[in-house]
Image (cartoon, rainbow, N blue to C red; front, side):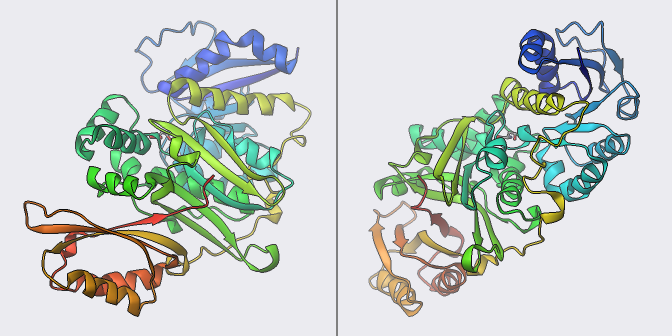
Length: 442
Ligand code: HSE
């Protein structure tokens, strides 16, 4: 039987999960493929820890170079994470004619555009389904199942840590800092939790999805990114009273005349979604991605976005895809980014000031006559119309929370109005929260 020989870089949580599937599901995999996938080698700096698996048939090394250049490896699985040395190992593996599968969203978001041309030139495949949405096959759906569509929008809850924190804050009225500690203890959070809670992890994932959706280049650094660290349990309650739930969403939309993609809108921020929407039902550490196309309309993908077993499931599915065309060729597979490399275009990112949204604004103001009139008259000057306004009871600090929902306006216009509002003597400048609302999520 034809055999695809796999070399694994990194025996951490996901690496062990991948090794476990390749060992425990061996028979299932060969029945599905009519081929064998064999783990021949693995590298990790720590070879002393017992991973609870039988590695007696596998060549173990503490040097990844042994694997990326080895003659008996057809496909390298990179599960080291981060930018370097992961980038160098992947590049060397491609240069040595090996297919690559990775779960590393940071690597693809930052260096994907260096790696894809090398892979395309050598007729090699790069699989990275596990990099976005963990075990959810959302990129396979986008690249293959939805290939007949011009994609109109992508909305995603792409970070389990943030979703866990927001869910817990809402259900228990708990403080952000306490819930973050719990998420870390449960092992959801990245090594540096700011990557999760400040939206960077979501921005990396969104930049990959957007480029795949619109045939553009990955521009992670240009994604407008705000995290969840300023949200309080009271904000979550106010949003709820107005009929919304707060989710950290990654949002990507194409803009241009007559179906042409001229600019790409990409933003990550806490977002108000209608309580009745599917997106609002996605709770705890689950992820979900809504992709809408011009023929298919709305589609939605839901599941575990992190963890050993779901992430390893996506890694092994990529390995099996590549194995199914091995060794005759990979022409049956869609290109890694869903468009042939030569047809992918460098499209500008839409400036955030030009994006249009409805807004949730929370201010803390002094309890004096005329304050609301001053605030609303500034909004009126900027032709920003209000949909709802709630004034809450006075805090112990003698400040009063005011929460407003606006109709649609541009970000530039909203920010100009906010800077005038925060200049008012009665408004506490450091205590302003602006959230964006998306009514279009399914
Ligand atoms: N830290 C990520 C999350 C998982 O919380 O969803 C890996 O992408």
